[in-house]
View 1 (cartoon, rainbow, N blue to C red):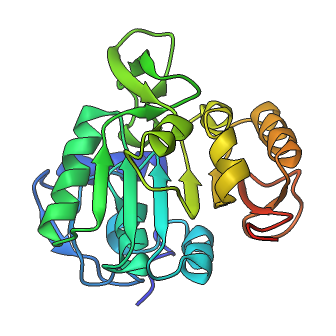
View 2 (cartoon, rainbow, N blue to C red):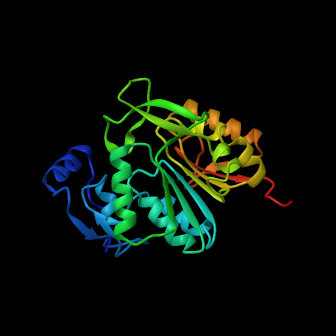
Length: 248
């Protein structure tokens, strides 16, 4: 069964979301999360149909190993958190970061209804400073972001501070999708990247930000490639590996 042919334009998606009951829960029909319970109207329907970002899914399945630690930075409602938790199994752990209160509520629901015990939620935005920031939660739920437009105030945390304080174990993998704050996330994780050399799955949200992220990762000893191959100038989603792995 393959639903990738479904024409998910914004208009059709909006119509479907309007008619689907907000509380409807069904099992995902295909993909690695097949059979997991999902709130159908939470986010894009590709989540529920099990066909969301197949290139990223394949990359995570290829690299994430049992017993490891995944940071899902920008967890939204939990699609990649659940996938990562399944891949690391009970011996591993997923740290899911989500500052949007509505998203965090749905994330927690997806975790609990599927019985995952290896996912820890941190309700904060990951950035380059510890403190607070204004946050725009008035957009579509998957694109809410740090913004000077004062909608709500959220906590901000750096990965370096979390690791140094042992509030979270050092990551083996970072999945970062934060709607324009990706450079701030990396800046707040420089010590961790130097010390622990996690693999990075990075979504970028403008050509300028992509260049800045690549330049910073290069200075930290990472090799950056397009997530799905091809020309890096055209790619938005990137995969970064340390040029010299930890221990060498």
